[in-house]
Image 1 (cartoon, rainbow, N blue to C red):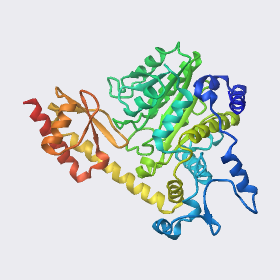
Image 2 (cartoon, rainbow, N blue to C red; image 1 turned 60 degrees about the vertical axis):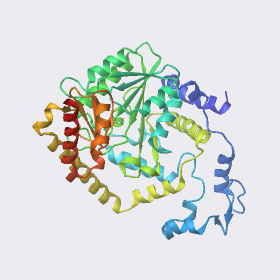
Image 3 (tube, rainbow, N blue to C red; image 1 turned 90 degrees about the horizontal axis):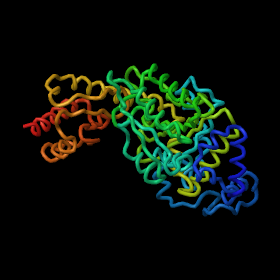
Image 4 (cartoon, rainbow, N blue to C red; image 1 turned 90 degrees about the vertical axis):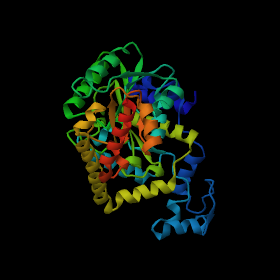
Length: 431
């Protein structure tokens, strides 16, 4: 094992043996090399005469570039913020601004408990880094039965982990805390587990209320007290789109210092929060009361980034940074939130139509981009195909009974027509 990896491991072990035990074999072997990038970073601070280190070309004391590309950005963005490589961990100013955003959005979260976010190539990349660092062959990943299908590739196919599911909702149409507890207890002989919490949930659009969130934390703390090491991975892709009575902070805040055997990891990004899906800018933030552990996890994360994509898109990071610093950001953020909420409200209003009851019920939703119908005596895939072929309506079949509807991409004025067409399709299949 590389001596740098050994040093990082020792620093983790010295402060929390449980976190060291959570690492996968790859995670234990991972490190950030003292190679070209670290030497270039040092030269960037000290080489006042010539800097002949990193592999870019320069011209007239700035990065060499095509002017027609620079013209696309105008004078508002400097060539130095577009054309050179971004650091593997991301632009430092962006990392710091995003940390301030996390703290502002989650007022109960203490700054000293979290590291500086590391920039990823959006959410999926962040999830795959966490899988690399913590998932071994057979590691249980605890998920609700309604989850984003890409988790299977990320954790099962790539890392050989085992998914363990529980029903997302209980008989009262609330978050199924008892089901989560049962799923965790069934894995108590494992050396570690990954509990993945995605709120607002994709596909249902549900976020727990305050009492449910506290119960989730208690279940995890009880399992930790019984000796189970728990990596709690919080997928906050749709963070902030809370329309009703749910928690308004990330559950990451509740778990950041919950127990020495609980490691909370927040994966989020500008992707969906700030409506820049193609920019591919996400973040990983670790929680620990140990600066040494936070540093070691950051170094290991940088090592994975260096060994896979090397670094993320510099132009995307620059644009996101300037957006977050703009006076227009909070104004437009609130405008888009109001628009999204109006679509969610309209969806609930339309779903109250009694004539739909013979075709479906719907799962609770109070946040996010989506909601799900639970179909009566109709196969969801058959309905999906029928709606496409006969009515030109696109939906997503989740399983045999559940159909996901993204109200996020339907104008409020069109939502009633959308569900009327879905009902027509359902009626066709029931004949």
